[in-house]
Image (cartoon, rainbow, N blue to C red; front, side, top):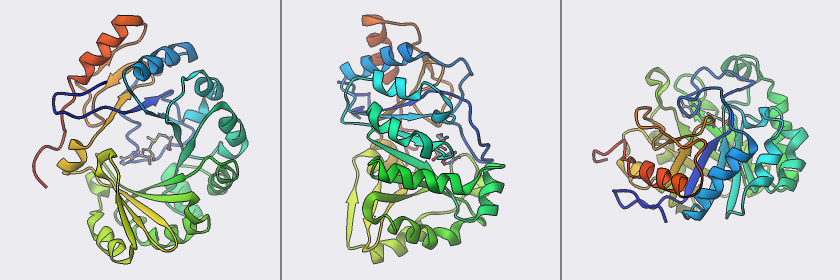
Length: 292
Ligand code: SAM
């Protein structure tokens, strides 16, 4: 079992499998620094299996754009069993591979989509085609990669007024598609205070669930489910962080917000790998530690 110095039990692994992306969203943090020296299927398998031995329950595959890797289904099928293996994607290549992802053992997907306006979508992604993403969501639902979570990064003066439209959009899929409203990080000019939206949604909710992960709140409305991801200045978010990250080039990243405490675990095996992971867990510190 992995427990850090602050008593936080680590149950979730977020592993990047590539730094490459077929879009270029202007606000994107790309999950922090990584070189383009991607790990092989076997290297990823070794690392993920070690985390499994240490009590990790859920794995999230990310990037860059994970569907840029031709061997993404091999990566998934090489993994040991977990309570959940999910993947976050921009959805551009999702419709054609959704069935294979399911077959390989993927439980569900998150699809990034900040707007339903074609022109705005093209602008934010610098060239992306909205209809491909919408097809991807539809196919993912058909293949049972559910619940699909639509990740909407809320950007000031850009898409705030689209939130109601997004709620209507996910409601078409009943509760098979959940809307995640995400506060932008590392981009002060684009920052919008999500608490204003949350107050309004809270009033309409018939039920509120608080997830173990980051104590994220999920509001169950009559027509849709809306989850809030608001890390900025949120000590509760950090104190309930049960996640650890691995970069595409094989380094443990104890916190998204920091690049100064990465631990290279690439090439390690057996006890050396286990010990390096345990050491990296001890470097974890809540980033936002003031009171909120
Ligand atoms: N390419 C994949 C995708 O689009 O989902 C995976 C990588 S992307 C970095 C993972 C998630 O991070 C996406 O949902 C994206 O919207 C979110 N993200 C990227 N930059 C962000 C930022 N500055 N603030 C908040 N969320 C961000």
